[in-house]
Length: 277
Image 1 (tube, rainbow, N blue to C red):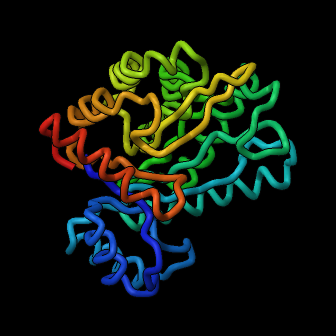
Image 2: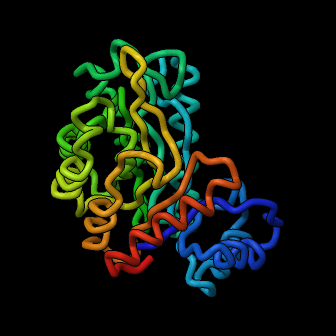
């Protein structure tokens, strides 16, 4: 596997400095660096710099709501996803990632219809539309797991993959996002093993963070830095090590000073297990 994360205070107009900044932090994977309007020469320069420094471009984000309630905004979101998937293909990124979206006004929020069969069917239709417009061969379109919209479990993810029925649809695994109840919280090792058993061959990239459960009623789960919560990183890294050696594990959602200790925790667990990052 390859550990990666964002870099800060770097000249993003220079691909060599961008690549060096990642390697200086010990990262071997990076988030997509370019705007979809980048010309072929620019894309080639960033791709070459990444290759020269053994840096894998893990994912290109297409963050938007292609199943939203406003049809104009939803169509614009689909177009954005197609545009970002095309960029991921040009860069040779592992995946273009987005969440499914939401049927409500908050693009990534809960809604009564999010887990309905109608939303499942709409998701299948929209993902096919995104993939079929681009027809990628080097990358894939992947849906990030979520707590309150599909895919909210490995079983529902498999249902989606089979229904979408496109080779270019892959899995983006964020296990913390699916820890949405106490039973999963207290059994994250078993849950992680179930995720990898069902989704392993399809996983293209993963997010690395952690989660805490507070004693405040009724139920409060919060993201936190890797190593400060309940996620079983021994199980996570053990299962990741069984996959393609280039599978990225990407740190996210932290203030800049928190990335170093998060990476240190993950590297420490990896060292104990004897697995390479």
